[in-house]
Length: 119
Length: 110
Image 1 (cartoon, rainbow over the protein chains, first blue to last red):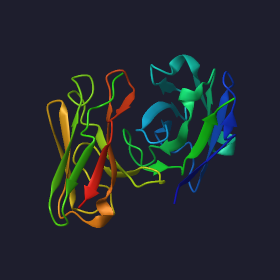
Image 2: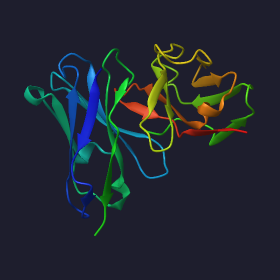
Image 3: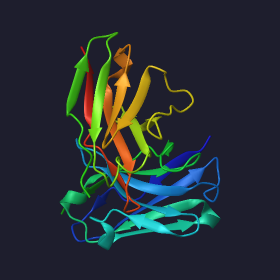
Image 4: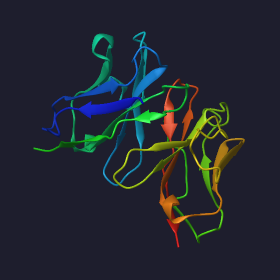
């Protein structure tokens, strides 16, 4: 059974850089379509941040593209998110998700990690 | 990119059927059959319940069904049960090679 687990700091100061890692277990990060990051501000809806393929190709939400980097580390079976110049509006639960068995959907999700941006 | 439009809330009594709409544009739902639906209980991660407009993953109840017409997708829950009380989100692939989610619908079982 494929499992995803997010990790990273839970508290950031404004203007800082958010860095999260998603560890994939129970399956190979190289054997699927795309890996994504999705976030959810407290009490609000889901927002797709971006995705990366095991080849290194990536796509991003236009509203976040200038601040987002997603990378993949096949040797450690994980992928990562960096979001620069954070503000309080970036406070959210961040989920990693995978298109493991089929493209264009997310059939595996991490449990999510809350990142709070506050001075 | 704009979010897909869903009703904020839908309610029904146990055993009834409810339908949640998801309205997009010709740049997403209207072009692709890559519409998926996710169920999210409070404090939990989203769970895939429908994909490619009308396909149900293994293990998901057949009380869930979905369809699409033009720029609007719909999710129907029949035989509503207490466990169906959750938030539901649609998602679509877009012509910009990105994804967009719906605004979310809170389902209440009366």
